Length: 309
Image (cartoon, rainbow, N blue to C red; front, side):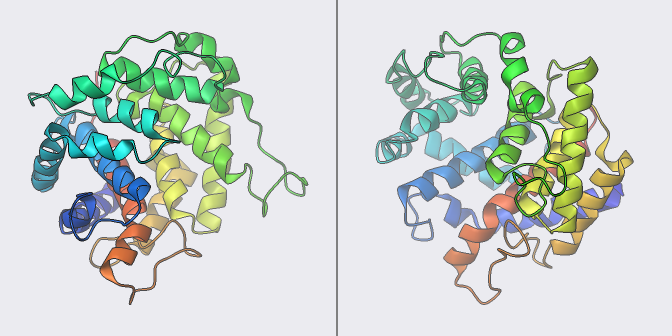
């Protein structure tokens, strides 16, 4: 099964490395909308950030890391966030948190200085939003007033959400949770566990509940070829202390992703139902495939590496 992770990782990293022009928000191949351009660059930076912490960082990300270093030292990327009012502050904080080491951080410091105290406070925000802000604020070294994780855990999606039973009117197509709820579960785990770097702080019944919820979600994703969410959930299993390849749902999800991966390494969409047309123009195919391919690469790299001591 580790060979499956190696295959997923090598293929996905190869495809990502061959499409860096689309990740550069100021290249001709970039997505047209400011939101898409910024999101692609930030996700590439997250992959590089997490990979750089591994005992054996992949050489295939060398050019990607160079692109991130260039973008993070120029003024254009933070200016792009101003064109996305709904996400400008969140993207600015994420940008600062993911800044590569040993760069000219003039633009990063200026971006942090532009964040207001209200954004960095708990007022009017869900437990999930507060966990997200605390994660990136701590990583960026910026002062905030968000509560400690221990106080946020009881109301977090990992603990508070309950899976819908089959036939439950609240279920969407038999799914244990709605799509926004499922992604809130995975992202909460990522932030609490720093993408597999630390323990997420759950134990006892709370940990058992979270693992069961993730298992149910994974079973549903495999049954319906939900590739993007499957990759995130396998990584969530790892964050929660399980060895995904030793769980039936995790092993099945990895094989589901292997079947979905194209010969060029791409995972062609968020799901089989939403896969890109193989004949789609390069930019359109990238827009539909890059996120799932990237999160698959991230999952495979982290899950196949030794746990931090």
